[in-house]
Image (cartoon, rainbow, N blue to C red):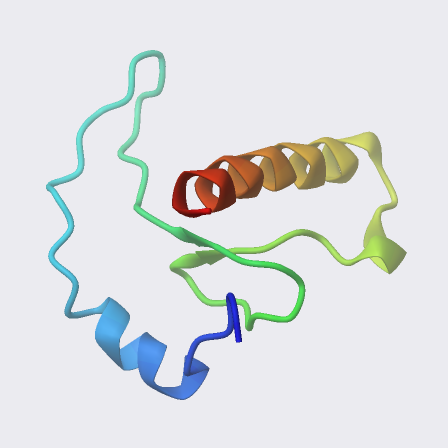
Length: 81
C-alpha cells in the first residue's frame, strides 16, 4: 500500500490538522501555505502539490518545477524510509 491514502477521507482530515501558524519566509513578501507532496496519481487540491503531467511539459519552468518537487519528495521519503 505504501504511499496510498484513503483520498476520500483525507480531504476531510486535512482541514482538521492543526498546522503551526503561517510565518513570512525570508525574501518573500507573502505567507506560504502548508502543502502535501504527491505524484501524478493524486487529485489536484489546494493543499496538494503534484508534478505537471509529462505530456504538458511545454516549457523549462515546468520541468524545473517537476525536478524540484521530485527532490523534495525524495527528502521526505528518505526521512520516513
